[in-house]
Amino acid sequence: MTDHDLQLKAVALRRRMLRLIHHAGAGHTGGGLSCLDILNVLYHRVLRVDPAAWPAPGRDRYVQSKGHCVEALYAVLADRGFFPDAHLDTVCQYRSYYVGHPTRKIRGIEFNTGALGHGLPICLGLALAAKMDRAPWRVFTLLGDGELAEGSNWEAAMAAAHYRLDNLVAVLDHNTLQITGPTRDVMSNEPLDEKWRAFGWEVRACDGHDYAALTAALSTPPPAGQPLLVIANTVKGRGVSFMENVGKWHHGVPSDAELARALAELDAAEAKLKEAVP
Amino acid sequence: MSAPAPSMFTPAALAVAGRLGLRLGRANLEEFAATLQELAAADRRIVVVTSDSRGSGKLAPFGQALPQQIVEVGIAEQNLVGITAGLAAAGKKAFGVSPSCFLTARALEQIKNDVCYSDVPGVLVGISAGVSYGALGSTHHSLHDLAALRAIHNVTVVVPADNFETREAVRFAAQAAAPVFLRFGKAPMYRLHAPGARFAPGRALPLRDGRDVAFLATGETVVHALLAAADLGTQGVSARVLSFPTVKPLDAEAVLAAGRECRAVVTVEEHSVHGGFGEAVAATLLAAGLAPRFRLVGFPDEDTVTGNQADIFRHYGLSMEGLGATARALLSGAAPGR
Image (tube, rainbow over all chains, first blue to last red; front, side, top):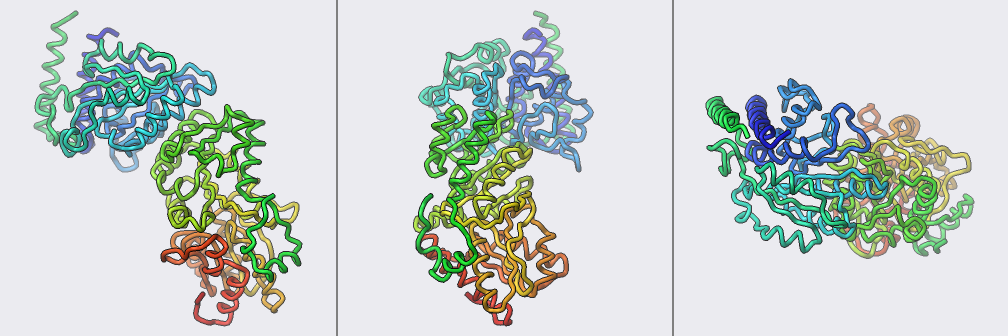
């Protein structure tokens, strides 16, 4: 798929995600929109996972540490054919497996996440297992920047470099906004690139909505013996003008009118993309 | 073999142990480490994860013999449990080993989510549990761990009493398809079981039959209950003793049989009186409509008395003498007291 194909798909995925949050009456809208392009690139260009052969022992592992943005993941997994799209009509409903955070009961999901600061340590265990078995599969996680205040991330950051886990990739959805406000006001964590480099990681920064840049950052292996952090600079609420960088959309659920407005914006973006055939 | 802590048993208790022919084994922790090393030498999927705890876990020989099967995470219990979960999900039989005081408190969220809720077959090993680190103070005590883990779904909680139960528990954990928590102390333990005893998860092991009082005990308190029962026997009191290596799931059948067949039930554990083994037994009895005379022996909800493990056990009545007095008072209808 070309960048253009993926950009078109991203519009469809954003629509799907917004519809499902609206239908479920709950969800993490802003963060879902900020990480959606990252997931789109991971699932179409980077991760070696086969929905038809799930869970093949040699698959790449993806653990979504920022589990609250599960709606974006649900949309991507359904699109990739891990489960029927109709399942998403049950999100957050009585007796549905599709709860508001990832669980292994859902085909395509590796771990039950949602409490923050858990994904990276888990990924270390997975990456160590691959190293022990001399297996070529890689391990990926998605972190939030607010999440980095959890100390367990730094325990894991230290250990990943200590064990030279060059089969481990952490992607930071660096949207700089958390539930209370800008991350720098809640608990400043910059300069992140220098911090992670000091911990022994290869660090790459890119525009987290630029398909070519994301693909390059995620596909090029890190230097031997170094884990890789990709700081994906993103916009919380990306793709819907009135949601972008607005705190209330952290877990705001669109009303009927807001959904219609958001979908209209996305339709317009799609039309524009279609006109601009590369 | 280490020498027994001299003050763990009174001369009278040592005499009863001698009369019963009990022989001192090694610390359950040592039995655990030796058993695991033996299993791991034959099964390369077995991996141990330590948080600067290989010395206290008696795992230094394991690390020397099987360096490819041990992962050191440094003093970082959250990372320890997360890594254990990841290894387990990728097909390793991972044992995360750390003092129970840290493992089950600092990393409780990782135990709950990464292992139990995610349903990966990781094994969590709480070493030097209870008041094994007696004199080091409450930072190093784990009198909450059974309560915390009993309230978490999807984990088998195993607290072995002696070397036999330990060995069997480790073998069970190494092949379990679901999460297991093992809890060990570091004092040498008497061998309690006759040859031919059968360990099964979720089942109590009978040590002595009796009809007046039943001691239902778990972990390293079981020997004191056994000595108390034998001593009571010389005073005309018939006492049953059951060892419960599995705290969850509880052997309800054995509990109910004791409640029906004995006049009184005494539970014994190296844990807070809140939320542990004794409350599980009490709930099981009451739910079945049984209300024998009942006493729960454990650590009261107070600033734990200072001293070594033997001092603390003696202070709270976790001794042959203390348990005997509790049973006699209960049978005579006296108000409970220490």
